[in-house]
Length: 152
Ligand SMILES: [Zn+2]
Image (cartoon, rainbow, N blue to C red):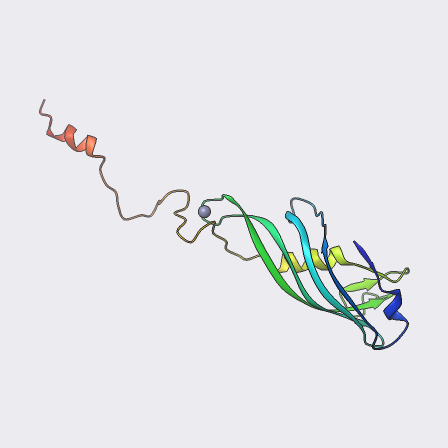
């Protein structure tokens, strides 16, 4: 999703508030977003660069770290990024503003989500996982207990 920054590029100090739901579609193997991302950003012309500040949140499909069940996990992250028109590799900015004065919001959302995916997620706090392999209880099935009593 490209956002036009033409208006605020004209004047230093100019601000643009952008608050909307943004539909994103990323490669499935990278990150799977469920529903639109909630974007609340303020873009400020700081002279040489444009600053983007605010928050973004989205529901991302993740697998439970214990049982691998698919869960929708809400990821919220703060944005504090410098955008620059005609940015080159030498510039220390991550996001460029293209020739048409537009910035790719999807890319800001994508990178933010990927950086903020929790290392561990569980479907519920008491998730027992796939099986208690190291569990202490190696209880013998009562049916087998009965078998022991049988004398041949
Ligand atoms: Zn689980």
